[in-house]
Image 1: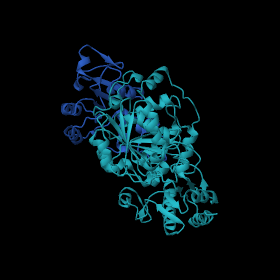
Image 2: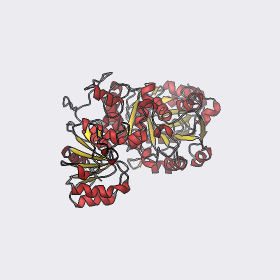
Image 3: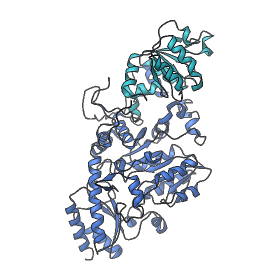
Length: 433
Length: 156
C-alpha cells in the first residue's frame, strides 16, 4: 500500500501548509519575526548543533518561507527546497554550495544575461571557470567536461533564446562525469516541466516570474531531487566534517536532503540572501493558481504566435509551441500537454519588419502591453533585449545568448486574447510612423 | 513501502526504543537521532557491546550488550548496523517481544524485514526515526523538505 499521490493542481494549493497549530488559522500566517525563543538552554544547544529541527533566526529559516520551499519542492517532485531573496540568489547559492576555487562549470550558452555575468565575471573572480556550450547539443556538453568540472548548468527553456534543453541527455552527460545537472526551470514553471523527473539533480526558479505570477514580488527557490550521490568523492564539502558545525558531515547526517541543508546552513546563513516572510506569502498566493494561469498563458501565446506568423508586417517568429520550431519534438516530450498541444509557456520572440527603429516604435506604440524587464506576469510584457536586458553582453555574446538585434521578446499575459491581438495589431501599424 | 498513516501509528505507539549500534560520539547520526527522540518523549535504550562492558551510559541510560540483556519491555528495535548484520538482531527483536523492527537509512535487510512481519511486528526499512518523526509531527517542514503531508488538520 502506498500513499495517495496528489495532482499538481492540489499540491499548488496544499503542499507545505496545514492549518496553523497555535490558532487553527486555515490560511498561512505571515510569521513576521526575526527570531524565535528557545525552550531551554538544552533546546538552544540542540538547534545550534543541528540535532533537532526548529527555527532560530529568520535568516536561516522561517515557517512562512518554509511553506513556499515545501510547495515548490512538491510541485517539482523533489525532496527539499530552499528559498532566497531572488532567482539570481537561488542560482548563486545553488552553485556556491558545491563549487570552490579551481572548479569548472559547463553551462548551456543561451542563458539569461544575469546568469552569464555570474558565471563569466563574478564566479571567475573566485577562481571558478565556466565553459559555455551550445545548449541544444548534448555532445557539446560532453566535449567540454574536464576533470575539475563540478556542475553542469542550463535553462530548460531559454530566456530569451527559447532554446529547449534535452534534459535527459544532458543529465546523462553530467552523471557520466559524476557531477550534478542544475536546471533553471523559470520559464516553464513546475506546472509545464519537471526537470528532476527527467534526470536533473537540482532546479532553480526565479519565483518572481510565473510562480508568483503577478509581477509584485521578488523571490527565488532551489529544489533538490535527493538522488545525487554526493559521496562519490568529488564533493568533499558534502562528506567531510564541516568546520562551521563542529564536524557534522552533511551527507552522512541528512542523506537525501543534505544538499539543501548545506545550502541553508553554510551559504544562505553566511551570505544572507534571505526571502522575507511577507514576500514568501505573496508568492504563495500566486502559486495557488499556477495551473490555471499557465494553461491560459499557453493557449494565449499559441494564438499570438500563429497571428504573428501569418502577419506580413512581421519578419519572423520563434515559439517552441509552434510545430515548425526545430525542437518541437523535444517540447512535446518534455512539456505538459495543454488543450491538446504541448504547453510551451508564455514567452515568444519575433522581429518586426523595419529593423531596430520599427521595433522600438512598436514597443512604444503598445497601449496596454507593458515595456519592462520581467516575464511571467498576468500582464502582457514586451522588451527589446539587445538594448536592455542583454546590453552588458558584447555582440558575439548576445548572438551566443540567442539575442538578435531586431528581436522583440513578448511575455504573453492572461488578458483576453482578442484584446492582446488588438494591441499588437495597432502597434504594428504604428511602427512605421 | 511505509505509508504516512503506518509511520504515524508506529511513532505514536512505540515509545521505548532500543537503539542497536548507538554511538557515544555526539556528532554521529545514531547519537543525533537518539538525542532527538529522547527530547521528544521517547525512552532510549542503548545497545552496544563496545560500551556495555565498561558499565557505560549514553544519554543518561545504561548501555546493554544485546537486546536479551534488557530487563524491561521494549517497543521498537532501531537498527544502526550494516545490512548484513541485521538478521540475528531481528530474531532477537521477535524473541524479546518488541512490536516493531526499524532499520535506519542505508540498512535494507529484506529477510529480516520479512521475518518480523511474519511474526506480527511492524517493519520499516531505509528510514530514519528522527527524520520521519520530524516529517510527520513537525520540524522537517521547517527546513523545506517535501513531507508529502496534505491535510486540513492541525499538527498535534
